[in-house]
Amino acid sequence: MNIIVCIKQVPDTSEVRIDPVTNTIIREGVPAIINPFDENAIEEALLLREEHGGKVTVITMGPPQAETALREALAMGADEAILVSDRCFAASDTLATSYVLSSAIREIGDYDLILTGKQAFDGDTAQVPPGIAEQLGIPQVTFAIGIEAEGRKVRVRRLLEDEFEVVEVRTPVLVSCVKQMNEPRRPGIKSKLAAKKKEIVIWDAACISAEACLCGFDGSPTRVVRTFAPTRSTQGKRFEGEARDSATAVVVALIDEKII
Image 1: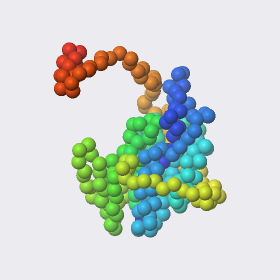
Image 2 (image 1 turned 135 degrees about the vertical axis):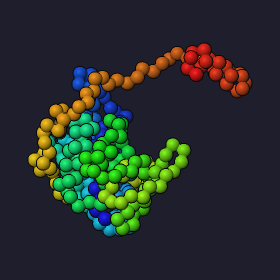
Image 3 (image 1 turned 30 degrees about the vertical axis):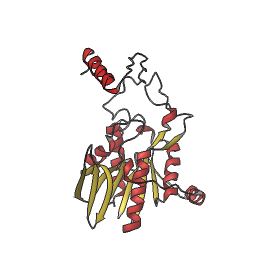
Image 4 (image 1 turned 90 degrees about the vertical axis):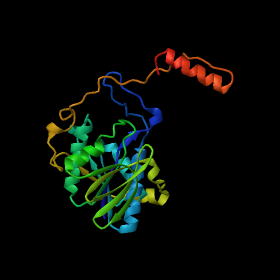
């Protein structure tokens, strides 16, 4: 089973800063990590390879420093890593990102399964995985917490709000993973040192036959008008006394404020 895992390098969420002029995330000087949901996708790919054989290829779109995330994935046990990097990819929204990644996946060619994280911690849109599936014309299954493979079929267990759902679909298919799926392994020193010596393939727009007009700012129909952190309200009411009386008082207050 040949598996492609799409990952993203994101800023450490505890230190995110926004440029007030461009409304984009300031990445310079901020520690970067593999998007946590993507770690679960990598782990699931490795588990499936251990059970069924095959190859795990990890791919990311980003600047040259995104190579660090790929080496972390190699240290976890991925077989190959591809960095898709070109200046014309800068400022890509989710549509342009989906186009670039799907173009790179077409270039890879031979795959049975594409795994991604549910969403990225920085953009938080969850639009890229379905966008890739749409561009490739393959089915997708979201919110996966378990995958079983049998021949040309996979059985995916999905986590819904108050129940589970099992979906059976033929490959190739894209599956996006949630945190409850597994516990990602933590590579040791030897694995990290070995990953530093492995080759990372670098593709630009020409390598994946991507049209510049569909990438980056020109290929992005959405614009970020404003990004800000909500202000914390210091106003409020305190209710004291017996629990039943306090609960009644809270409901009355919410009705008075026309909240309920």
